[in-house]
Length: 189
Image 1 (cartoon, rainbow, N blue to C red):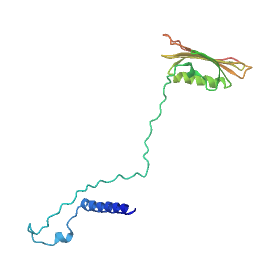
Image 2 (image 1 turned 30 degrees about the vertical axis):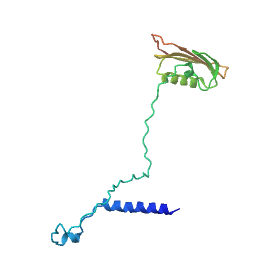
Image 3 (image 1 turned 180 degrees about the vertical axis):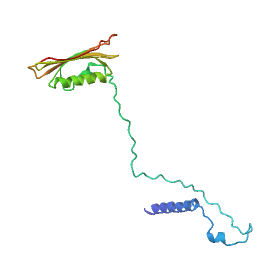
Image 4 (image 1 turned 60 degrees about the vertical axis):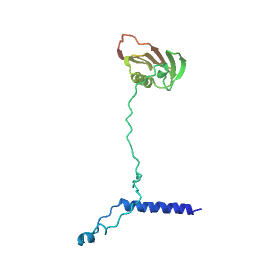
């Protein structure tokens, strides 16, 4: 059972030995070069016998270290979702939803909600056309509006003095040909 394996290994080793012998060219030894010799006659030289041609192909060497290629730096992609769902605040409860409006509630601070919506407007490659923040007697009323080529949104964020819940209303409209930009910050005590 092991004899065919041994024979195959022997043939492979013999082939490697022949290949190495042909691959390495022999050079005349120093003694042969330095000693004078008479010019041999053609009959004195042995006729080389043809040997089988074996081409030595070096095997690829495995790398010991993995090649690390840098990945491209991610770039901020412009949101293309123009549905009302793109403006659904993550920590909010849906009270009412249509294809063009949302009414939500959340226990998150109105300032944090306002900041998130401002970022959403910018991610959608829209201009902020209205940004009004009003705070009086622990009540908050913030209004944001964004206008873009494909979408306009109006967002109202409101928390009354006695409530711990913030109300969020988002309205989506088709873009108009004129855009008015209003930025107001109003704090009343």
